[in-house]
Length: 204
Image 1 (cartoon, rainbow, N blue to C red):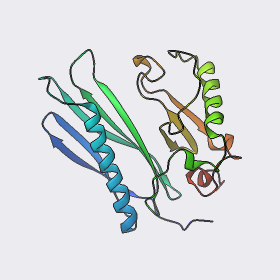
Image 2 (image 1 turned 90 degrees about the vertical axis):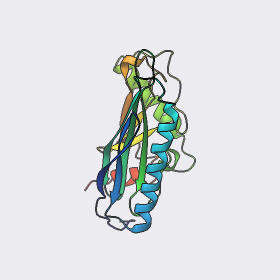
Image 3 (image 1 turned 180 degrees about the horizontal axis):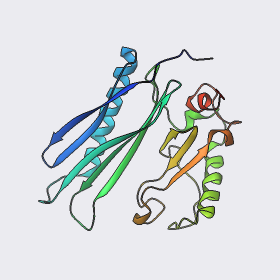
């Protein structure tokens, strides 16, 4: 194995409150100090950005709730999603989602491009697979789907890469977040063998 075995991270929930808001933030322990600190700093920074992106809670009825889901915590890979729901006035509230995928041995956070071999046209491959799923699942999109962004949000779960889109990005609000799981085995030829998907692609 190219990487040294690291026990799964220990993830606890920390409650953070301020007027009209209640956030449950993941706090990671059980890792090397430098990795743990890097991961927790990135999580806190992302949480602050989500709060900021939702805007002011000035409406008397305004409220904000933050929560998270752990997607993968094995093979030195920690992948999680942070959610922030806020009602700030208007017809309905809005949920934002931001996902982070780390090397739990080093604390490195991965971009989508870093999951693949340099020079591989991963955006086209993923876009083609997503386009096929849109047709197969009969998902209603605002306009014909063309391509993902090179930094499209993602997480890793159950040996799959899950690409997703924000509310209203490609589909009406009623669809919620459109998720597109893609098996790591469908990407084997372009996966970076030393990255998180490379570790999921090993049969063990």
